[in-house]
Length: 88
Image (cartoon, rainbow, N blue to C red):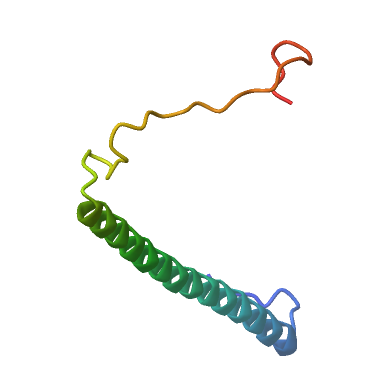
């Protein structure tokens, strides 16, 4: 069984190949850019975490989360009124 051109000119084939190559290249550039952005964000997060742990250790704050001594968590206050079951 042989391949049939189905009436497409060589120009249309080259144009289709260029279009597919552009799409693949564009998606590749997006993926590579996202990888490096995530890598930078991970490094910044690690530095913040280390700085926070260092500050908590030097301030003498104990606790699992580098806590603030005996300060309890204060829940946010929800506005009163409005229809029941609706937040806003």
